[in-house]
Length: 623
Image: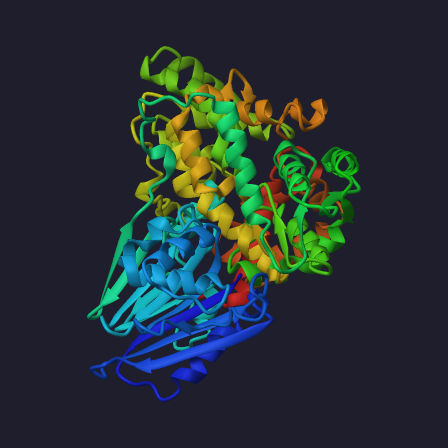
């Protein structure tokens, strides 16, 4: 794993090499073990090309330096990630006459491109983003893996193209005034996130998952080679034994991701997903697995006892970390810098802290990331089945009355309010966004007269695709909109601590298998992750298999009313704060009073305002 950065510039730039190094220096945390650079003029002298790399050594410790140039084709590559079917591809390419000099998968990617061109990405099974310069064709290719585990950001302006694993590397090129995108900001407030491919930085976007971009002759074109798996109707051919097929595929996904030349371990929450990963890892290791868990002093929020149960069951080398509000206040600004964004989910902080702890002994961890999106395990997945009744227009009035009654729901009923107001929306994308948002459009408009003029910037990929199934449009929405953001955050949180995270549930073959199965294998009645529970029932303790999904939550409400109260006020009450520039002061004051008194649950909104303020201070965005 590593970080990549680079550019295509019009004309010649005397300090191009210096700028490229500045870009990679800004993401040194992604690859503290080495660096490499490639700077060249195009054949016609009209452009300057730069590829930069920061390396974290997990595989092929001696032979994986980058950039790497193919000796026959002259193609130069920088890649961030791992190719899990590298051995199979190497064998296939050797049969075609290709020769390899290292064990690194970078050589395999170069030869795959030489043999199959841009279409090679459809054959690469793994987690990656890469940039390659094809000198013979005077062509740059950027690519991102099927499900978007590894991020890649793009900025185009004035005849130049900049790209990098993180936005801060693009800003480090210089000559870019960071500006807040007001439409993306509105999206952030309403849905709690910014829909891909947009970011909070105007003019900087993400390459979408399962896509590649080709720059040639001054023009950039983007192609999707892998749409979200649930975007297609299930094929007619049934799966003979779904549980056995699923279990075998997940086991293989875990095994492949355990290939490493450096020490590794697993994040263990004690929930079904991470427990399944640790159980399967134990099958493939002669040594005890290193496991890492994080929790809180507030017992109702902590899953440490469940994690300890699994660690004892599989005899892992277990490390448990308990964090407090002081830890959060100390590290939130650092994580905002690493994420290039407000920390939308407070749960990111505990994960970052346990990643720092894990980095003391390992360089890679396996995680349960992406499982909830793969299986449809959010409340909105269940709720959407009820919302689907609006097709028969039977419950419209009852649903509207429930939404109206929920508007003034007291503290402790925030999720009920979101559920009711979401079900009242007729537009399916609108409904889905509200399930996970911090506030409704109406609340958003009350909070800020300026932002009320903007509209959320949902990407077309997030649109429901018209399946007759109620749950598949939700899965399509998740996999095309929310999942890329979650995976991107997971990548940057762990890379902030200079360790790699691998997610077996994000195996594209596993996702495609699940997309072929009837909906009941994901949600049966009110039971979620049906097929995973069946696959694990003879492997995990019954108490874990039957345990309902619990979101990993941080006691933000309690902390904002207690140890973080002064911290919040110092930021939001500061003269010239972004919150005061965007929002009505009286509304902010009322929000804080209601939160601190316990009358209303505004914890997520207060958290978002606090993070926006720290974000603006860190990057000094104009708005």
